[in-house]
Figure 1 (cartoon, rainbow, N blue to C red):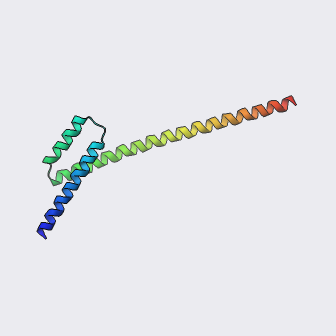
Figure 2: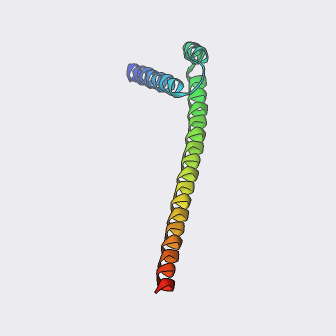
Figure 3: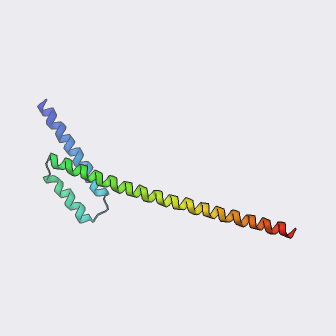
Length: 104
């Protein structure tokens, strides 16, 4: 049982290290900064690794949320522009029909 717990903790730590490294690689920061983060992982104990993991994932969630909001705003603007174009086209169409009817 004792060896099983040690192996389980080791496996969890290695899994977290792998995830944290992947998350760091995903960040859009300078490569030197990324390397420093990755190198610093080797000195973290389990508690600090857990804290770092939680903070990093929450930062990434904030970034993703901002990207989603930006994307939503962009899509909303595109829809607005399309609707505006359709309204203008319809107005021009109605004007052309009015011109034809006026000439009759």
